[in-house]
Length: 187
Figure (cartoon, helix red, strand yellow):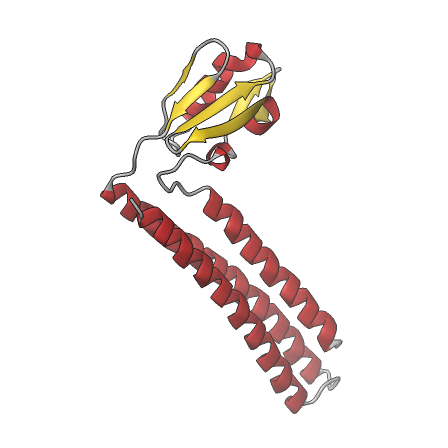
């Protein structure tokens, strides 16, 4: 077993888990309009499902408004319908014939608390991904010890390195989550 290679693979997996967590954080509403809020919206256009980002430019001119400017005005109605029917967003878009305006309602205290619960679920999902990467690396080390390619001391040293790696990435998850929670709870 090449411990450096396994450590490198584990680090790559853990970093990918943190990056995925960051992407998930972008999807959580904070009370402020942000173009990434519409990242998951798919629109029926040209006979197929397409990403909203591929059909329109999305801007946030102020904290409570998103403006969606379709590249092709013929897709305006489909965009309005797709945003309205996305229950996860709960938004009510309006169009003026050229652009779609999406007013972002202010979050209530209850909604903010629900968002923090969702955030905590995302943190746990990220932590599970990190632990899975750790478990896989340690399993490889245990297998190498059984095959007599490394000794017990080497395995313990390797496990400590993997645990240190896990702790670094877990701390990063916690920092990101704490910052997002503060952002959500700020009125």
